[in-house]
Image (cartoon, rainbow, N blue to C red; front, side):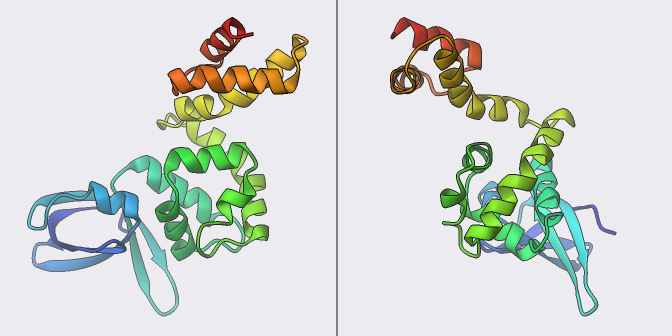
Length: 196
């Protein structure tokens, strides 16, 4: 199995790239995130690779970031999500928006991605929450992102537990995060309480 390719970037398009290694050109399927991270054509490039073997073909999927590869592998472990659909998902939504959608149970946002219907969106939400937490525990740079994305909901819940009305709590949390988007739960609560 091919796990990584290092060579010269011969060509790149939003869905595919060709990497030359010792005179052999490897066609690699890529997401838009990886496409934007690629260097200019003719420059050295290294991609982490997932090798997908079928009866009639061997397909390579390349990733500029190890975290994106891991998320891709989590996606294809879900029933009825193949490699091509997984790449479409990674191309159709940013990593942080994807996490927000998963942890916010936002099936409407997910079903807006081409190829994702309501049932698939529901399956993604149901099956990926635990898998994303596993990624964070594995040491990938998702822990902070996950904490940041879940902080607003957790803050509203905490404020409601303190006796504030949900509408007031949501308004205060929204106001706090307009000033500074990336805040921990503790920071969000502190700033929101100052507005109540």
